[in-house]
Amino acid sequence: MAHHKSAEKRNRQSIKRNLYNRANKKLVKEAVKAVRSAQTADVAKEALTKAMSILDKVAARGVLHKNTVANRKSSLARFVNRLTAA
Image 1 (tube, rainbow, N blue to C red):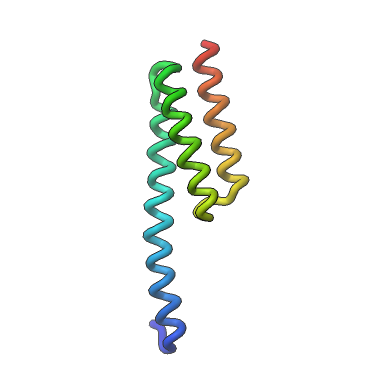
Image 2 (image 1 turned 90 degrees about the vertical axis):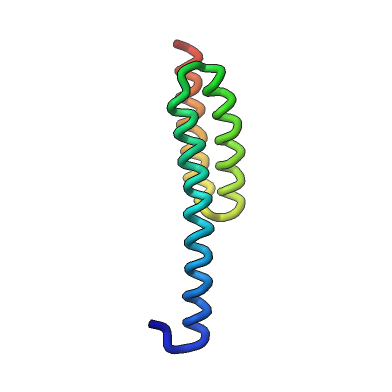
């Protein structure tokens, strides 16, 4: 338990950031899942554009590192490209 005023504030901030980060990571997971579960290439492409947008926003907000986001975008793009080729 925090004993100083600054430690109590830091604890409050930590709780708020944790909720914020969890909500944003949930958005990312849902977007990625939508791309991966797409049955057709057209649906996958639409889901990919939405997922890319969400990933860019999350990187800009600092929830995920920019390289992590780049890796996820790359892997999703490869997945969709394989779907279209098949």
